[in-house]
Image 1 (cartoon, rainbow, N blue to C red):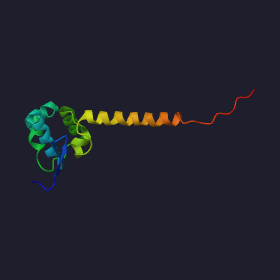
Image 2: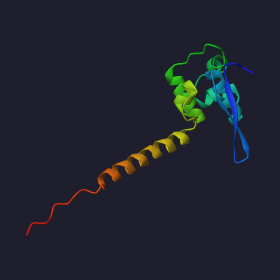
Image 3: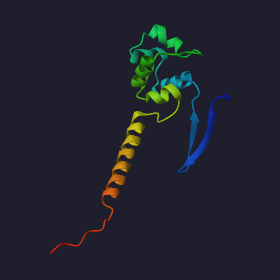
Image 4: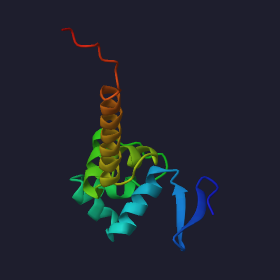
Length: 126
């Protein structure tokens, strides 16, 4: 096992789930390829990159792509740019959207609680 990858297993509803933090871009790209049953060249084509140039280079140590390449790869794989670039944050765009929606709802709840705080009412003047 690679010492750079932190792996552990948790059980949720009697189903073992493997958790890990990918340590390199190449490992995250490999995960994308395996999940989608793509070849390296197919990933490059789906990202509108020159397959001849990128297919092999993406998996070499020290590959340091431009931000535009990371964005194109993330778009093709429907993953977040943050996850692809760093291995951190939500992997799927849907996860990021849910997380942002929850933040908005939480802010709305806090705002409405602030507005509905009972304030003393001055007696009516007659």
